[in-house]
Amino acid sequence: MADRETLDVYRERAGDYAKRFASEGKIGRHLQAFLDEVPKGGRVLDLGCGPGDALAGMVSSGFDAEGLDASPEFAEMARMRSGANVRLAEFADLDDVEAFDGIYANFSLLHAPKSDMPDHLRQIASALKPGGIFHLGTKTGDGERRDGLGRFYAFYSEDELDGLLADAGFDVISRDFGEEVGLGGTKDPWIILLARKA
Image (cartoon, rainbow, N blue to C red; front, side, top):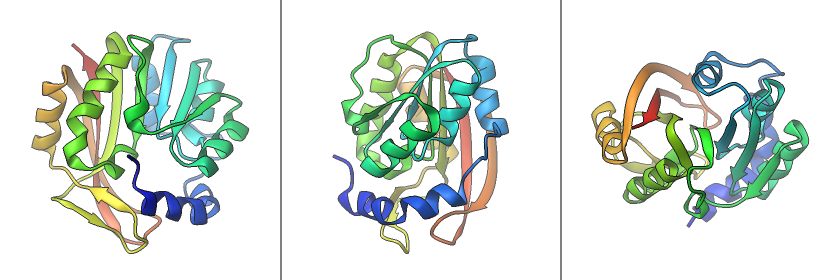
């Protein structure tokens, strides 16, 4: 089940979050790298789509895109920004089978407890077509904790993620690292992995 305290923060700060991370119609390099691996015009899912910037980029690039988010405020923003279908649902509700050419989870699954991650990755693998592409962006570190705003976070090492993805049937095809100041005001290290369903 989605963390209520985290959803409350996003309900109260949805506008602030949307402004801080607005892409203004530009497609960032990580989203472009994901789209480059997916068949042109393919079906893609933005899992935890937030206010819908990446989803809008998928649509404008000619992909058959839809979103999923547990926040009603974000789901409505994403619908308005992208014109795409957006499901109001939690990660655990993903029950599609071989439906997508690509699934994009950019700093969304980090709000799920670590104990749930193996199941979420298995569901994602099941929802992807054979050879489908999975983008995973998350913060690196150890353990689980709340940030200064009260949002729940799970942190992973590179080795942990490699093992989890392998167990779910993925082969990592690229990785990138960096640091960024988020909505909570702290500068945190991150990792972005692109993986292919084996």
